[in-house]
Length: 153
Image 1 (tube, rainbow, N blue to C red):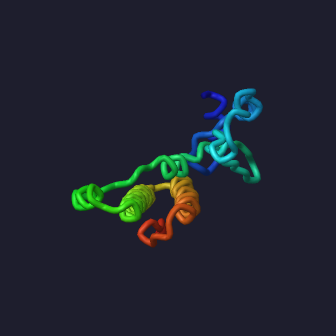
Image 2 (cartoon, rainbow, N blue to C red):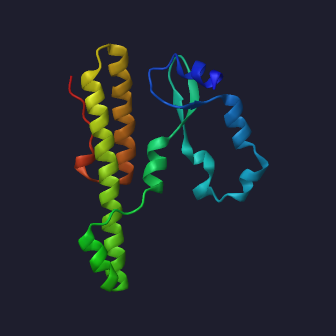
């Protein structure tokens, strides 16, 4: 933890980083071969590089989006109980999209509010980076414009 903190400290980004030793341990672990490529645990990490530092960090927003389930209204739950298989799939898809939209909208709102309260440029820079990270991940998982995270100075 101390090494991760020291790795994160000089950066301008708010992340949970891994030390190179831990990432190497995870990537070379003998049990990793039991995972298929699409569920490889190392997909949960992204690389950060700038002129001062380089490290792996936890891609928490993708983890949340990939593990989210559908959100149903009471009307959808009722409709589901008598729906055809195709209609059931449509209801599940709509519920999943609704939950993704809620996740990214709430995340964007939190970033915007925190950015607005930030008093120092170094903190504002962290939220600017976080908004960019949000935009990249949200655009991968959804096309909803309500998920956007545009910061205003």
